[in-house]
Amino acid sequence: MATVNEQYLKELPDIYREILSAFPRLEPTRKAGYGLAYQTLYESLRERCSLGDIIQACQQMQQGGAVEIKQRIFVHPTEMGEQIIEGLTGKKPRESTVPAFPTPPKG
Image (tube, rainbow, N blue to C red):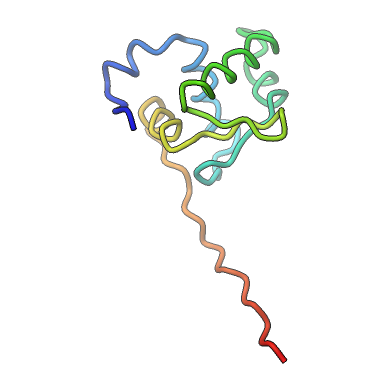
């Protein structure tokens, strides 16, 4: 995987910075890889970006490996995307504290 360093973050175009920085702001208790819908991102960024620009930028980030788009509307940061978010915002995703669901005994 490519290295996300200060130079990379500094040169990242504004639209990508704004979209990725929105994740911890919109969902402060978000776990790694948890996504947001295009419409949610748009509501947060509508003063600066059109919905079409957000969709196109997310598609570009998917091609670059920073996000995965699921069910055609949900944008989920990949490991690289999480590194970028942390580098831009200083915020790490929350670790899961929910235990695994126990399987009932057979029989």
